[in-house]
Length: 121
Length: 110
Image (cartoon, rainbow over all chains, first blue to last red):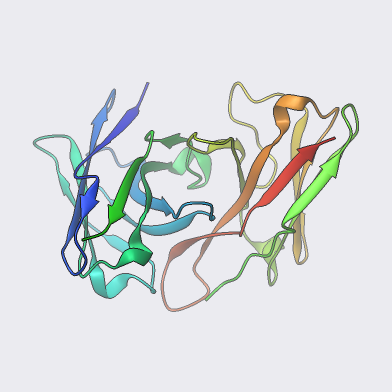
């Protein structure tokens, strides 16, 4: 059973870089069956896709965030990471790591529990 | 970029049928996925690829997709179905490939 767990600072200062890591258990991050991604949800608001990465290294980013986002994979640790630069209060949100499966037509059947990141000085 | 439009809220009495719509330009040509999110919890996939259900999701949850509207139908609504529901597609119609979520619909069980 594939499981995901986010980790990283819960508080980030404005203009700094938000960094989160998602640890994958119960399966290999190198599998060709999955896309690994990040989705966020500002308090009281809806879901926003940030971006995804395929095991080959191909990345896909939300155009509205593309200039500030980097998603990468560390196969040796079975982890993938999110970096979001130049953050502002508008980036305050619960950040979910997620797994999209080709057998689910790229829907997201597996989510991490989510981690709240607050941008504040 | 591709836009998905959902009604902000839908209300239904227990035992009745709830229908939540998701509008998008020619959405019938895309695979639509639906998620249920309860307060303080991560979303749960309830319907994928328009009308398929992951294991463990009751048959009361069904989906359809045609033309410019996709619909999530919840039959015999129960109090425990009260939640926010989001539709989602992958959009490759622009100059990039990316996931798009609808704004969400709050289902209230009266």
